[in-house]
Amino acid sequence: MRGKLRWAGVSALIIGLGLGGCSAVDSVDLSSWHSSSIESVSPSLKQDYSLALKQLDQVEVKGRTAKTGYARDQFGQGWKDPDRNGCDARNDVLARDLNEVKFKPGSAQCTVLSGVFTDPYTGEQIDFVRGPSTSTAVQIDHVVALSDSWQKGAQLWSGEKRLQFANDPLNLLASDGPTNAAKGDKDAATWLPPNKGFRCDYVARQTEVKAKYGVWMTPAEHQAIKRILERCM
Image (cartoon, rainbow, N blue to C red; front, side, top):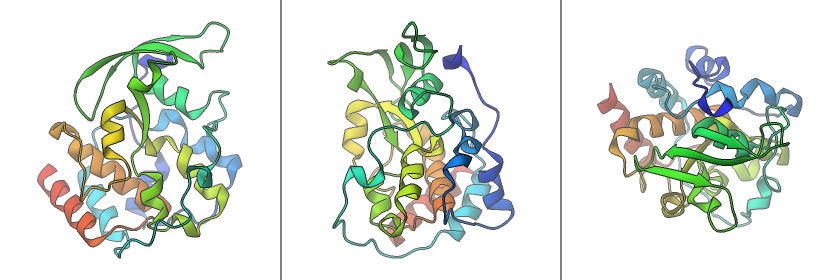
């Protein structure tokens, strides 16, 4: 079952950022989305914090720009299928992050109907059931919020690059709905997961995403992440 898979490591692309110099994604070839497939990352992955610190040193540091012009649809309408497996990114992430997953019959194991979810942000277990009044209990969080990225470089990107960013599994985690709402578009200087045991992985993942796409950090954000990562070693 797809929901029970566990993956061994970060994609070679992300590892290469730390070993061969940080080269942000400047242009997007949508035909290569499958190289950053849903199977290349997992929220339970033990991060290489020394690599994250190296990547952090390469992230540009400056103040945020105005939020003027931001809208969710600047990053595309709805969820796309980045790894071309026939399933949209939301269902792929649910299948990756939940256990005991059950799929809608006839959906080619795409539409997740239910599953057991241990939320990394709170450590709490949630029984997910798809439905008009229940689906929001488990949401898909952009680890680096779209609005945050907009204020730190994304407004200068092409529409295709923003679309890739919004659907990249590296930047997506299933999360408790209310906790995701509380996070909003805050960065690491103003919000961290209540579950302290996940904070090292969380800021390491944010650093990987920002290094990959060339999203900058504010001085306060950079200092907060560096302080956390140094304590994780």
